[in-house]
Length: 360
Image (cartoon, rainbow, N blue to C red; front, side):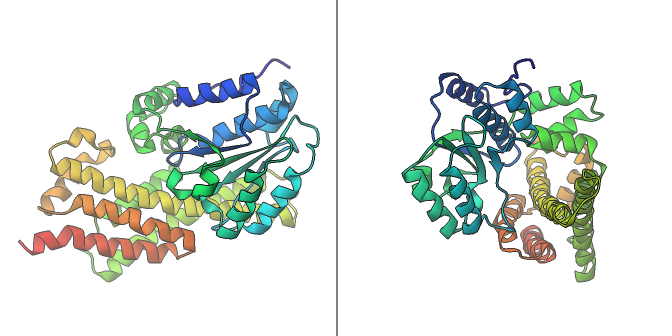
């Protein structure tokens, strides 16, 4: 098999990729890394590629198998619900203490900001006194979301959003119909931009979000209906993901069905998070339009609607409305229902938009 270029096709973060390539070429690899940056900027993809190269130890065939999820020494640990539990970490540590099955190393990819306190403390003991050839790659949206004690024992590697122009160029090469819009909506994530270019379900979610985002004049029942519209689209995305996972098995057994169900729930929760992010983006765009800087808006296909809404609500606190979404987003980690989160958010946003107008 021809030699695999470990990071071929990865967009952006040139300095970060160079650092990891240097670690692979010299063999000077830390026992733990923190890959941190905004969601969707490539951390997980790079972690999988990096982990595959580490376990393969220069064997192109082994690296190819690891990249396809077929190598026993590369493990990616997903949270059980909102958190990665101490039980999951104990199993990781048991494996980390033993020799690799067949590879040069064992590599474990975890989501650092989902570790509960007990799990984080259990992992910390191993990071303080590493044994064997195990390497831990921890993913996080920010350094602040990781316990300082863990952060101090790992090599921090920053991932920045991919420049919009670079994402747009990639989408044009793929033949996307609206590369400028999809690149803007991707917000520095090639994967998310590609979904906006190709995924009809995500376009439907965005349509529902726009409808809910400006439902200020509706009564409670109308606003509740708008929220239900978002949740219905999120459920549709989850169901589609579950169906895809099930279809990958010829005869899915109970374990496969449970895995597909978990994947569907993760996709639904991801869609709700994206809906909250889209709402924040809409209000930031409204603020840009109100400030006379419409060229900064991401929703370039809805500028006329944004101008009309801004005109209807003079003095609205659009920046404050966007900040509300960041505050309520954290509730998703505690299994609060999406309906409740969205209704609380829209109620608070309504006050941010309407109160300056009503008080004038």
